[in-house]
Length: 623
Image 1 (cartoon, one colour):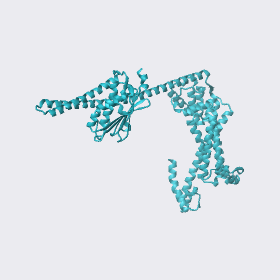
Image 2 (image 1 turned 90 degrees about the vertical axis):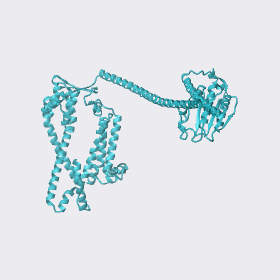
Image 3 (image 1 turned 135 degrees about the vertical axis):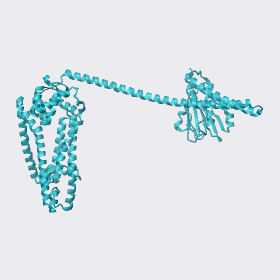
Image 4 (image 1 turned 90 degrees about the horizontal axis):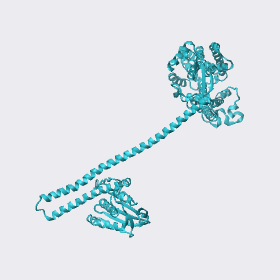
């Protein structure tokens, strides 16, 4: 919100300054004062100057205080604590020591800032100096993000990465500013150090054509991330680093306390922790934090002598907020005993880990089995649904097929019964229809019975040597008259005779009759053509029944051999029949160790091809 609000005013002032002062008569940083002065608004300029002075002063104060706290907590105080041994009452002087360190840090920071301003800063705008600073702060990003999300990172990798990043940043941004102020010779910028052109700060490694800020950010972050990554991979973590990495990366695991083993075990007296918190945070705040810990953990610290790892971590976390993480770790370390877990405990951890891994593998195996079972159940369910649909269609079809001839027989019989004096020719015609419909009923019932026999294995499948050419010829002869009556052009070509196969004479006859009957049913109405060819191919008898009907789509060429399957013809509608003929035919051929398939194209008719092993190939089956 702060950045948004100040930029609302920055843009209009910048636009007005560029418009009023073309050619760079005034520095852009001074537009806010130059604009009212150029228009004779001295009072407004006075207020702007006072506002700018107060804002700049407050920013300097906030920045210096923040830097002094960071320097005192994270640099100076840890060094002081490492050079002396603090015990008990000596902590009472730490607040005064820390305050003195911060005051000295403020003076040092102000002197350094003023020195940089006098040496370099007067040559650059505030924006340029700010961009240089932002690029420096960006060097912390890889280490911060890596520490949050990457467990494998090491302290050595983080330090090397940041040192490399800051080194490249210092070489490409602050160092060139000293060249322009005359501190370093100009040839350093133009030719690079020692005349090495690809080391020029503003064109490092030959990268030219970009702003020096973009180039510096790219190279510094590239070196920072790369060295951080590779050094972490090739260095090992200390026990403390492992513990800290687990704490930061798997933070959700520790929200309600961790039950896992720490790699390093720490112990301290509860009274020592209480003294530390009271000395550095004040007695009221220290007692408040300990009471909150007791309520959260539901324990009474007054009854405990030794503090566990949770309380130590809790105290260290809150001390870090006041004196910095490094100082808090040193102070907590001075009152704690730290030692690796014992070998027995490590074996216990490994045993638990082994059990967890085995349990996890068992769960994965069980999950995979359940997934396979689920898929099989889904497939079985789909098959059952499809079978149920086909059975429903079959019942509907069979009912219709039974009702149609029965209705015809009943109607014609009643006419002959109730009509006296019916001409003899008409009686014969009616009787012929009754016989035809009766035969139709017989075929339908036979198909249903055949299906039942095939599925229940009640059929006697004793195979004997028979001449398949003779079977085909007899079946063809029996249907010739029907084809002639329908004006269908037909032919039979037997190119080899005899063709001896091991088979069931009646069932093979049924196969040929079914195929020719299908061809009769589906060939063209007025220009029907049926060609039947039987030949020997190698050790196989091949029967082809070809018609010139509508053909069978490729997607349906496999399902036509399934139970209850009937393909709808857009021109003729749903065909007559039960949808069992081709299924029975396919089942019979399988019983004879043969094969049946169809070849067809759109509007090109269909050719059903039956392949049966000749006697030499079927001999093993006969035995």
